[in-house]
Image (cartoon, rainbow over all chains, first blue to last red):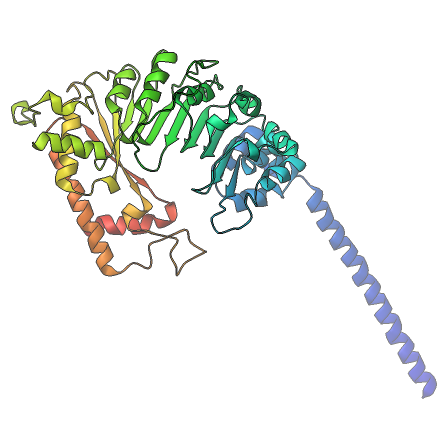
Amino acid sequence: MCCADTVVANEILTYQLWYRTIAGIKWLFRVGTLGASTTRSSPITKLPQDLVQIIFSYFIYDKHSLLACSLTCYSWYIAVVPHLHHTLTTENYTYFLTDRKPLWPRPLQKSYQLGLLPLIKRFRIRLGPHDEFTPEWLGNKHTLRYFSALTNLQELGIDNLQVSSFMPNIRQCFGHFSPTLRFLALKEPRGSCRQILYFIGLFPNLQDLKLNYSIPEDEHESMADATLVPLSIPPLQGQLTLTCFTRESLMKDTIGFFGGLHFRHMDLFKVKCVRLLLDACAETLETLRLYPTDVYGEEFLEIRNE
Amino acid sequence: MNSSKRFLVDSHELLQHFDLSRSRSLRTLETTAESIISADTASDFLKSVLSTIPPPVPLDIIILYRDRDLGARIECKICKPTKPVCFGHNFPWEWDFYAECYRRQLKVFQEMYSVRDFRLILCADAFDCVGGGVLYVYWRTL
């Protein structure tokens, strides 16, 4: 019985080994087949790159999808990466923080280290209401180097820019944006008319201009740098957006130095010099955005009712 | 429409700010729905501006509706952070409020037609995912 048991046990072991070997061979084949399917090129990768870019442009605001696409394959990464790093916004609210400028220039530094700054087309520096963007924000030589690496910037937005504090070296800080910059958005810019005009004149290809103030203020213009002349005459043929803008003399200087205005679109909210702007752009204006709750509109209606 | 019945501005002095008679290439006037708060003020303002544009020029009037103009809650406390815009947690009286706003705006548009002809374009600047809510509000209004 013992020998018979041993023979049966050997037979079972042999069968087990046999079937395990067969299963192993089948598994290897299956894995091999799967491996072959992953290396086979997907039809999507055969799409022309232009077409792929058009498809991706439909969800350029969906960062999560863009990120997922960039991890799919190399051709998708190439198509997606300009959208993924198109915009850089630095939030620098220091209202609740004791340490001033805690975030600056970390986003710039990180992008610089990854070599992404040349990909950025839109750069926005957001500050708290009590902060001012002065040369000390760029004082560090490393920060200035990061700032200078934004070589393809088309849209620039800066809050609380103290133009006067950058004079007379403002060109050294912002001059490298000259060839590419098309859109300039300034929130609460400070400086004399000539200083701001000089800053705008640094960008000879500028098309769109946005000047936002939070409340309409009485015009008390500084006469600093009164002899300053802009270095170039930007075309300014795109959109002009003004909010709570009462600096009529700045607009008069702009019209005078740039030989008139040629904006095709205007968005005016609580603007004192509406008539001046409408007359200056009479030949080119195609779209005008007005607001019935505009204080100057209300004033106008009060006059009418009298 | 008979031009004699159209709105006329009596004094040219009143239009010192918003005189568009010199604008030769103006084709579009835009405004936001939220800026039409008072029907009388808005219609007076817009009628006055419209009256300065020479009649033969074809004109588009675009009214921009943002999410909050369409009854949306921005950063709804209940949905946060999954939905940036929410239509699902409004009280019934809020829909009635928005319907009243739309009636007021329709009145303004009707009065504007008394000044000159134009093409009215209502532009909903809303996400696709909240389109259902937008249609619901319009259905309630009409």
